[in-house]
Image (cartoon, rainbow, N blue to C red; front, top):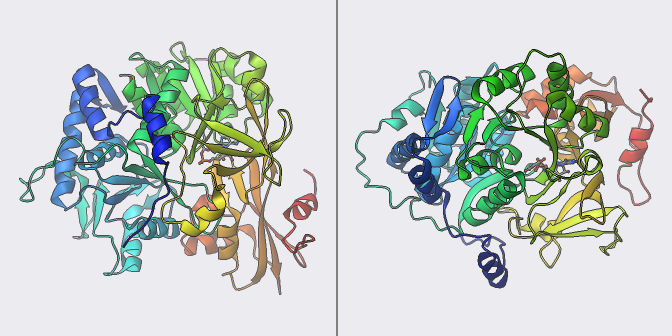
Amino acid sequence: MTETQRTWSEAESARYRAAGHWQGVTFGARLRTWAAAHGGRVALVDGDRRWTYAELDTEADRVAAGLHGLGIGRGDRVVVQLPNRAEFLLVWFGLQRLGAVPVHAMPGHRRREIGHLVRVAGAVACVVPDRHARFDHRELMREVRAEQGPGGSLRHVVVVGDPGNDEGFVPFAALRTPAPSASGPVSGDAGGADAADVALLLLSGGTTGLPKLIPRTHDDYAYNARACVEVCALDARTVYLAVLPLGFNFTFACPGVLGTLMAGGTVVVAPDPSPQTGYALVEREGVTLTSLTPPLVPHWTQEAAAGGWDLGSLSVVQVGGARLPEDHARTLGPALGVTVQQVFGMAEGLINLTRLDDPEDLVCATQGRPVSPDDEVLVVDADGRPVPDGTAGELLTRGPYTLRGYYRAEEHNRTAFTPDGYYRSGDVVRRLASGHLVVVGRIKDQINRGGEKVAAVEVEEQLLTHPAITAAALVGVPDERWGERSVAFVVCAGTAPGAREVAAHLKERGLAGYKAPDEVVQVPGLPLTAVGKVDKAALARGLPRP
Ligand code: J2J
């Protein structure tokens, strides 16, 4: 199959290399260098288990050998759906060592999402836990495997933990102690991959039917992390606590896991996002930096204010993924005794951070400014014309770590980018004279439920499969806890199903649980705008005010 992946022009690539942004080093080779530089330092902590840089490097080799024995190699895509455990990183670096490409799935994804990822990516393998959060991922994989059929790309399922009695599943433990492989040694530190190759595929929040895949190269993604490392001034003393899912771009590279490893610091994984778990790890491991989404902030603030925790090591708490209410930003810092940093990022690329020395008003009331001097940001009106600073408009962006095209999505790419390569973010922002951005809204048809993105169209399509529902519109409305919650407006011949029944139906359809509407409201018909689109603003206005 011939396929074209839209990418940076030769001239742009040359410019990013000359500027030192793109360093021509793969992640597989980077791990080797880190191990040489900080071999005896602790790289990774998960509960009572610890890996030094040297051990992480050796472990990546062992996992790579096992995966290689399964026939996985350069350029192969592998869906990784693992919770916040060390194995996520062991698998990730094992794949990097082979030049294979991890596809970051979220722990909450179910049959529809995982099946879709496998198909679009043409994945040869999936790596899953046995069970997580009272859900059996082996069951899920049996369904996915059956759905893909013998003609599909999926050849292996690797299970971290107990593979059960399915002979088709490869236990992760067996991968790590492979019999000498007949298929020869792995070539080089990255299986022969080039730094300009795709290193990983991230998921977009999605505005259309199903999530799009975002290709990130070794060069661009390493720069993403390094630019954040510089702004956040990480060094070998940094201890980063991964509270949010590891597969989330924010946690992984902004600066997150990769940034911390680049700086020679220590990554600690938190098995759940509660402040009790987090603070116990802060005390035990001397955590200096962590990142949260806005719905966690009140809990973390209250727990700290209640006292009893020694949070002395913690110096910076990043908050991003959705809009942080200004008063929450103002109380968080003093309650924890930390510097707050707002993060407005996207898996597609552009990362904005407030600076550690920004005045309080900028930290609390803006979502930061771009991390790279070569990030190009335009704020435009409905006709695509730039608006003056201070005026709201859509954020368009391009630069050294922002994608030029989604993976295998040529039709979508024609509208998602401008002809000169700017990504249309769908976010409505105001830019201040300082360059800081304030996120004021959104034109994409997506609901941001406390950082978890729900594409309205995807859920609407599934709502229509319910026998009682003849028309449906999913709308985001303001919510105290989530920032935004989802309301499904449905048209039904008889009585509308309740929210519980709808959730059960969507679950049955294989949709991730967080996409189920928080509320279902029956309406006689869906109002239309002048151009004949469903008038979602009118629907939201019609709801009783809390
Ligand atoms: C308002 N909206 C925000 C913020 C993201 C760091 C941080 C977040 C993400 C992320 C990320 C926001 N205020 N502070 O990848 O590396 C909304 C915008 C944006 C979309 C991207 C990172 N921070 N958003 O959230 O790909 O609408 O990435 O376009 O999941 O989240 O979502 P996602």
